Image (cartoon, rainbow, N blue to C red):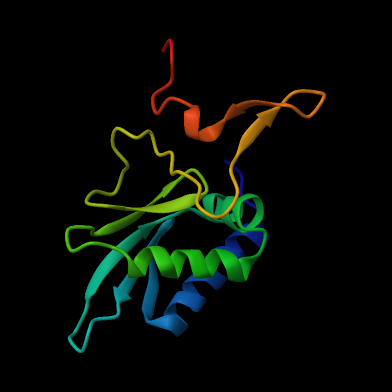
Length: 140
């Protein structure tokens, strides 16, 4: 996929924002190493598996702003469990993971927040809800 210079610049701005919060560095294309803050101790390092194109989806489609998307990344990193060594991109969100790829959930993260995602017909009636969609594709 072709990335724009703006997408790449925004991804590097994410690395800088995470580095301002704790210690972070880009270790490869689509991989950021982050030192999670510890409770009085040395903390631990995790890898964020997120390409510039995926980051663009988070800043635009999901959160609508760079700052809100960075806040969500920080929140996800702060909630990682002891066995989670990776924060992996799932649809519009990072998902804590023990491996660099998401497993059986197909990479779909449930949206959070006060609203819900729905499909509507031409008259505005709700025809489906994201919460009701199957986790695995049907008929594949």
